[in-house]
Image: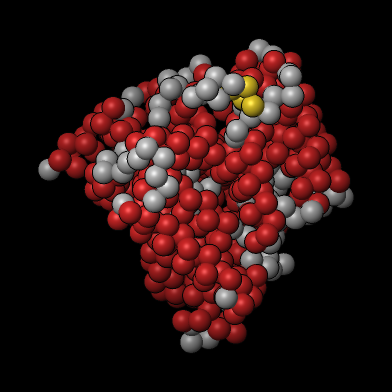
Length: 501
């Protein structure tokens, strides 16, 4: 009954005209971002972070969440129609989705993707509503030592499960932790690593780094590549899958939903890993694995359901423990701190309207996305023909105005530009920006809890291993490190993240 009362509160918050409008705006923006190759949810949310200054906290977070899971829907449209994944997690969708389109079943493929995503999104929202409160109750038992150990586990999990080189991911995490130390020390009041620059005494703004590393660097990457706009046909065909396609897609969608829901909770798991894992699972379980890559509905339904389920369950560690599991939820932490809201278990008690309003808005958003994605396919197709040279100046301008509006300081624009250039070279070196972002967000929180734990234990470092819960979390982190160090596991991990063309 208590959950029903909470959901009633959520519906009363989410169904206000203002919040419905921002949910719709987020879904439209997210779909648009997913459709247009070269623009992802991370740079877009980074660019829109300053907008949350002028929006109410609930409305701002509802819009940002809509952008995130909306981009998962939109990415499938271009992946199916033109074999151009608009979003990273849609890479797997290309394999069978585009083949279905070439076989004259584009409409059916789009329906399978949209309906699978809707089912997965609704299921993941139910999980979020059901499991978040008990997890938050457990989180209330956490002290500084437990929070520090949990953040260590989160960072190691993010490194282990993230794609790309393991040593490079570790280096990026460490660099993020170091950047988080720039500014005035809260305990001593001494300025650290500011190099005598007054503007750095307040630290490096999270949004500035995010816009540089993801926004400007992404623009430079796209400009460095020769434009590859593909001529597409407007022939979509029937929007309804036939009986055989539905029969093959339905169980795959269910399995993908379950797998994505589980992997989404893990730090660094996210939509990309879930879609790859689902495709691998469906191929293993199939009686006709040779059909995969030639237009098998299961090869489309499974990954699409998995990436949408993961996109939404990734909010569980954020809302219950205050730990961002990926770059997008790290940006959501930034949006919450803008409004002086500390992510974690206290959100449920101190801001129940925000917590339950956000959860209910996800269900509403999924309904909106189904309505948007099927009738508006023709519109999204036309948007694919917009040249990138027309888009990028507007994005640069938006980034610059957004960064300036944070503190009304031109220095922030210079910092963004510097991180944009550095981010571009990082991408050339195959160094991911997401681990850096997680390190930057979690670094100050880790330091604060580490020092607080030592203060309470009077300088006894064994407090981290003598407290059972803290010890368990550190052991889990050590097991993750050992597992990924095993040669056979490491080789399999590298094979998993090789993107198939």
